[in-house]
Amino acid sequence: MINSVPVSQDTTIATSDITSALDGILTTDKFLASPQMSAFLRYVVEQTLIGNTRRIKAFTVGIEALGKPASFDPQTDPSVRVLAKRLRSSLDTYYLQNPDTKIFIEMKPGSYVPKFLLRSEMPVTMAPMPYHQHQPMTNQVAQSPVQSTMQAEPAREAVQQTTNDSPAEQYNSAHLSVQQQPNGHTGQSNSDAANSGSHDDQEDRNASINQLWQAYKSSSKVA
Image (tube, rainbow, N blue to C red; front, side, top):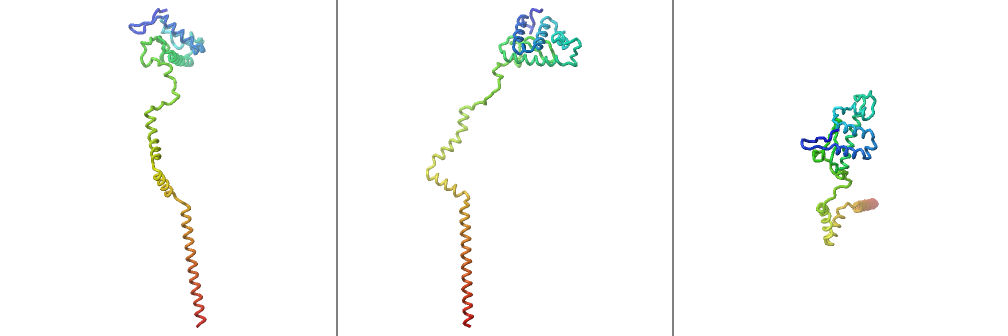
């Protein structure tokens, strides 16, 4: 087995440190609950450490790590590709939940050969954030005191304006509001008055006609 693995021109990682990092991953609940995923990761890491990266193919992983039969065909059986995708996701979750990890085991899409990185060697976009920063926000952002004061100011001014009015001004305002509202009773009273006036005029005309008729009859008797 190789004693150290180069990660850059000036930096190497000791094999013992890599195996310790591997053991730390494999002893988590998620990997303990998935023996095949653990066997996949252990196989590709050990083959890389002994310099057999050319053997790390879907076929050899399926047969030597996952116990597939010799008739296993990666072209028709996608189980290795599916498990590799799941393994990458599980590694990402592990590093998010363990931000103090010093050595990272990375397996990029399109390849089953892992790479080993120190935290200082990782690109900024790959460095995991503290776990608590990835938690969803359950509450909305609270407004600042200045924003709350600005929003409450118009309502406060309206209340103060009403309170500061004199009793006479408040009475005039209320009286004006009542006058502006339609009054069904007033309209009905006006209509009743008009009908009453028309009835009185009709009675007067009838009385006049009756008087003329009586006068006509009287003059006819005299003649």
